[in-house]
Length: 218
Image 1: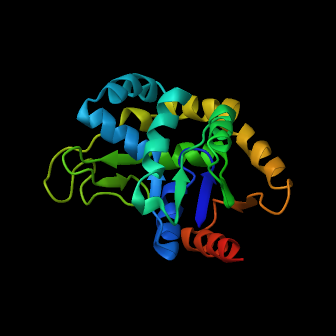
Image 2: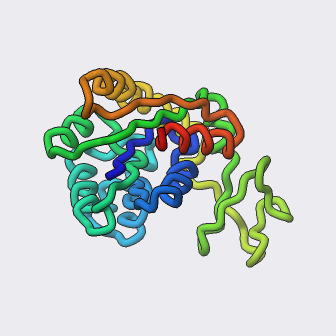
């Protein structure tokens, strides 16, 4: 059993590293962000409630997220473990996991300064039809603002605009960053406590990957 929590601000690279971990240990990545975006696209009740909050850079209520995650981790593909990417976001969510007897083996924190996060996220551009993502600096389209495949105009998602990113980071520091202390304290509780490791997310992606995998295997 390998249940892993990834912590860090939006844009720190949690999703990218989760993919590497998922492949290495053959366990599913559970991203609440992806689940919420799917719910919004489907127009479900949860999606409608979440859409306005996410566009404003806020956090969806604990009850909605906890119900979504509990349902997901009960599925057969999570029998050998899972990666929680973007959950828990708050102390009540973390406590709800503990109250539900969901054992966590390892907590991985990826640390990136706010200004670097803003630079990373505000540069993203997306092709709405396919979901293809570009970056104005790191992965630009062949023609500025135009999708390589279809020739259609790229958009900047509302939650990738700098003002929204700053609001999301403020929310992260107010609520989610307290989880660092929560799980650092948990790691001191004894033999069955989750391990805790922190990594510098400004390093090259592959360097971060190797360091994380080494810690998890250790």
